[in-house]
Length: 289
Image (cartoon, rainbow, N blue to C red; front, side):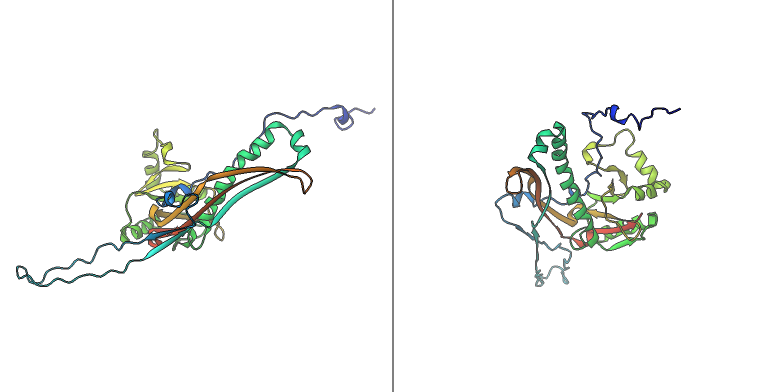
């Protein structure tokens, strides 16, 4: 006896296309907001590609008059100042195109989903550049910690001591960790208690995406977008002034029709930006999981 099955009846079993879509969520964008944006207003559209940032030598060399009350001559200090150039010389973009006939026939929300995803994809690219650039990003900092090994209190303390030794302000200090390194922190009771006590019931959305609490002098952020080490991840700790960032305009979307290649509807989004490591001593790359 032969039974009918789903295979034999496949021609008569209709398939329905839902008007809803299952969206793949990308990792959150964290790093751009933690950089120093003070010079961004000076490099707007039409203002060139370079900001010259003058350095100022901190006054730590005061002298003491050797013979009080005698009007002895003073010793004058001559300082040589320097400057740092912040170049806006990078562009992150995402583009796609569809044959004109497919644009007509595709489900109405498909192009909208593609377009909405452009901004997030570009932002993630900028985040990844900050994390992995070995000249001006997190990868340019001196490395502490051990690849693919749990973060410990000694590593975090050594990074904090470095900032203190270099007179980095106590405010706007950030520790950016991968999900696995966050798990490492949660194994340390003292740190787990700090994260719990200062966030439970009042985790501030104003701190930005990825914020998970405070540890010592650091605001702690979690990111899926950090650079990979040999086996683990390259986390980072820094004070905001370490890296200067400037974006010219926000995300710009453009669309047109290409008839030369066969009639395509083309879409692209891009952002022009640049960043510069200004204070090397104000940060550390932190190897971990």
